[in-house]
Length: 221
Image: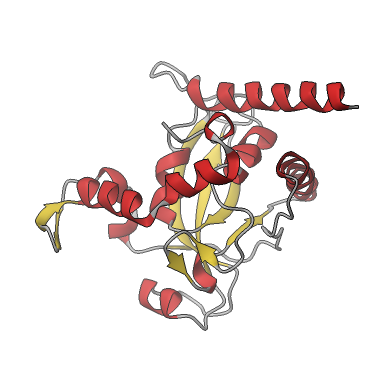
């Protein structure tokens, strides 16, 4: 049994590595796209991670899971809307499978924390998977069970019904690579540099590495 579990773990690790690092500039999508919505704390970070993956056509930031219509960033982060900061991932299933995407997602967050993610606390920063179909739900539940076996800990990331996905404000989209200047305590710096400072200061990569280990955390350099 231990040998079988080791083989499964190695196979999963290979799939995750292939899902991420085969992202070559000349890769072309087939035009057949599906969507997966996930919440993983700060949507800038989730968007930045998944736009590196071969087969991902686009990742956009937004809000979902709550009851407030057309919510704003201030409303969502203040609390009371029920919404999560979420990312809608458009992908080509002939290039990257839903299973690989789900495994990448779970290993890019702290699945043991139900109070937020990293330095961002509160309901809007919790993790969740919002399947768009029964097959996506089955895949999500399977991925969570696999992650739980690998960690030997309870995975608190829920699988929730997909509700309306509201796009976040324009300035949130592709924030991680923006050149617009923002005012920080370090003075005016570009969005992309502000993002890098935020991600490091928030401890996202350090905590993911602590939870999963460097080898199983696909987006950690």
